[in-house]
Image (cartoon, rainbow, N blue to C red):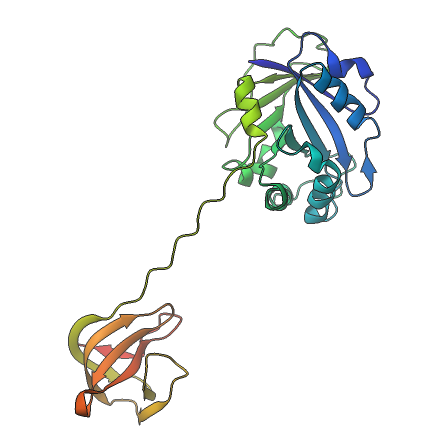
Length: 283
């Protein structure tokens, strides 16, 4: 496992380049009004020392999409090189308790960057971000005490459900935010990279299936020139009328029946509407 320190504007600048840490995580933005003036100072110093890098946004609880856009706009030069994260805490957060907020944030950030950010949250509030567990890594805060001023790893159970495990565990936040990272250096670099969207499945082409039978209408319907609800009407039938059909077509919205007519032509009638409601009885 790797050691990570996370820093903000009031941290000693030396924290960004500690000799015994592997990763430097830096606060970048908050809400839609704040950019850490020391963010790039720490970022470039850590990068020069060969540190792996991360950067995070502290949620202010305004519009989730607007905050994600603000975060991306002010840090887009880091995308692909450093791992992004979103910090979900109660302090100065107008939307604390909203279990959909972070999901909206990460979806918008992914739309902009192609990267899924880590989610920072205290272990007692995992339920507020549970709907992100299948797409984002977990950065969980869980302390053995508020006076743990050491890099010695405490022996304790760390709640992570519904995640199987954490990506990052912050185990102290007293004089320094100390974190244990549950991956390799290459694994951390992969977290910084954009993920390819799953290709959309091509819709299956609707095809006629040969099937003979009768259809008795349960309401007035029209027979159409083609299997489209806006196509011209050939005939109007009333409730109780019965027609013969020789094929069926399950379209995107409606079930159509094909009626053989004179001179080798066909008529078409809807048997189930767009709500899958049957409009008559098929035998």
